[in-house]
Image 1: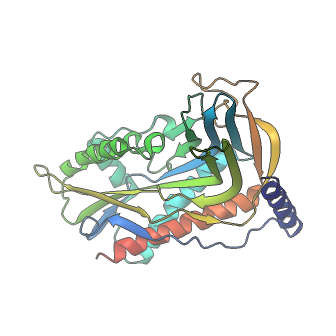
Image 2: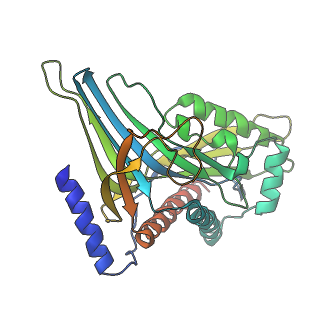
Image 3: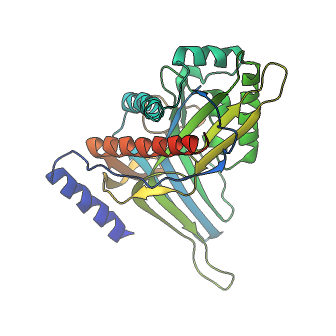
Length: 327
């Protein structure tokens, strides 16, 4: 662990010494899933484009009362205004890439009108902030805190804000059910809705337990920027007012991380249960606890921003490739 921390710290120092501009990074993202036929159309609408910034992680491992380990890491140095700007950029880039590939797009204004007519609720304030929060671990667990945003022109949709249940099939069923409202869209011939949900992480954590014949509880974490395989693109092909449309979706085959250094670790410098560490106010469910401390992952902002841009461009390119391959 110490070696990983030292390596990350030295890497950031070298990046700073060489300037703040990050080299372009290509993330290897290939899509897989139920998109054959569902995304075949002549017009496309993007009702929203969620960008989910993971802002804290906590790994916990419990063998017994006397054998337990916990490690928490919190992203610092990024404010919500920066996240909002990058979210708008990601949405605009997808539209640009789709148009460049010859795909016809419904305007943002018309798409939002269809979404509202379908009764799909927008996320209040176009924002969701969640901290790690307290909890009980039996065995081992990885908990996350995050910030979810949508672009100004296509705000985040509440049924599609699934970070809280990213691994929960019920959350995906709920999202599909919400998109069914789009089946009432007039003039839906050859129209396809796609709603990306990009998930960006900043650290890879593990929680391990010993075997049945002994061993100790352990946790580890290493700073690393990447796109998570759970960055699903929900899709809906409406079939007219009185018919049932076809839901579907696709997602990256695997996580895509880079070894590019972008942050410095400051041990014990972050409050773990103070929301996402990006606001002066604290969610009432996650009051700050003085003894709940974690390591601060303090970003080199220009480098981190560059990686975010490289990530959404690679993710968007993979979306476009998946769409074009089915036309």
